[in-house]
Length: 77
Image 1 (cartoon, rainbow, N blue to C red):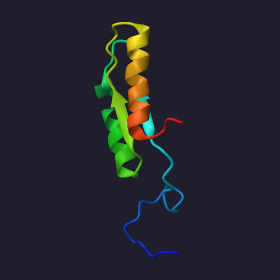
Image 2 (cartoon, rainbow, N blue to C red):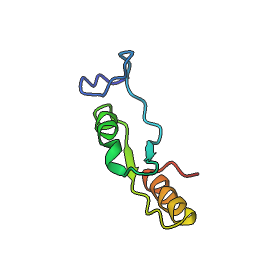
Image 3 (cartoon, rainbow, N blue to C red):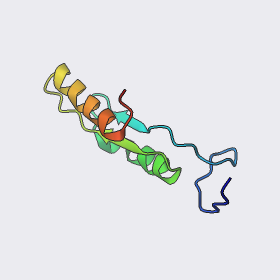
């Protein structure tokens, strides 16, 4: 066990465990900007996060953008 006083802590006071990250996808009439506060808080807690911007040019295009983000953050299997 290491003694790292700078390690991020969770709400229960324990160390944050790293398991992938978060991909945040907005809905209609929004953009990735709607996740700015959430991304900042996740970053503060040491959780990698990506907010995607959907092109709304078709379902397949939106899915491709989301899948690319999942792959980029390292959550794809």
